[in-house]
Length: 491
Image (cartoon, rainbow, N blue to C red; front, side):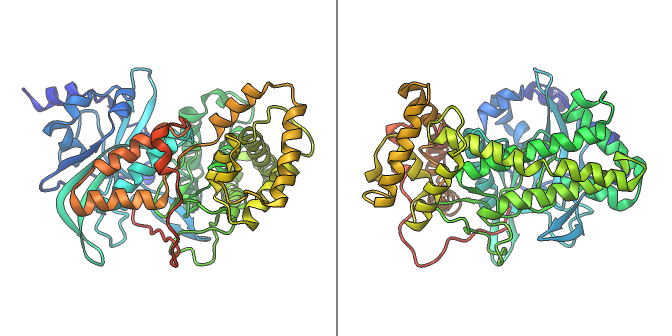
């Protein structure tokens, strides 16, 4: 059987429309082969959604593709160029350890990027080795699939292979490659890269490509680039509101980590909040809290302003008018975010209609939670089942007063108690990827080669709104510790 025939059996149907953009946006680059690849995690449901043959992909033929040792038919491997404001400082970047194999065309005629992360050096590696270690790749797999289960737009993980080669960091670590699936890898930083080059035609080509790929309905609008700005603002306002609603902290909201499609991308120093504290930050390099939980909303607006700046030359020839147009659209971000967030908070409290004091009702609860160091997820879970004894707010006078106001608010709405209850169950996850549970799974897999802990965790996280008995043991916050939990940019 020929290699091409082997690859056809796996279901690959790859194109690379990105390679039709001006050459400045990428470098042709093949992955660097590895010695002894081994499949350690494979996402069968995602493979089926992509039209891939899960069984064949778990043979040597599929593993060779995930390792970068073989290139599937139709692939045009490349590394993407982009820029990014990293903690406020603009830098020219690019895929330093990732290769875009191409775009898988699904049986439903949808298009998804297939990218190998940790697949070797590229022209953008900036002295790095282009490799990744096993722990961070498994961590991205866990968190991205948890985000998918929570209903939050996200890149996803198709497979992780160990490479059989060490990567040298502070110590020698086992190497690995993650296969990442995304609506696309076009970032705010991609537009910054194009604008920084001063090539208006290349910028226009990128904008046209982005519209056709993600927002085709606006292509015939009178002002398609203004419509593009509007759509991206909507996507980001919705996405970041969803993060806030589940206590997710991205950790590194640089402009190169913000997708135009509105998907969450890059799971390095991210984590989920336990105790409710708006100042929570986990990233070891975010010493000033730029990307703390409370700052995600304004940073989202800051990043969008940088995106708007890249489009000025396309919005209008008169730059003063272009700035005015961009500023008007940017003024919509905060109201859009607030509308999404408040709607989500109403749902978490079982409220289906709107009253003018709803925001105060929510803010009062959050203040009580912060003052009493209540667990964010478990507080809403306790409210869902009317079990305040399961939270730190039990018997607190201020909470009892708030609870009466909340119950009166629910009684005023026309929705039945059953409808309100169902809404809360569908809006308040029973489980999140608790940081200590993720670390437990990674230690078992990386240090002992035991993936059973990770498999059980993934199973629990796949249906976070299931509220099942077997999820109970995963609901507890971590044991008290004198040391704060820290995350690192290891992915």
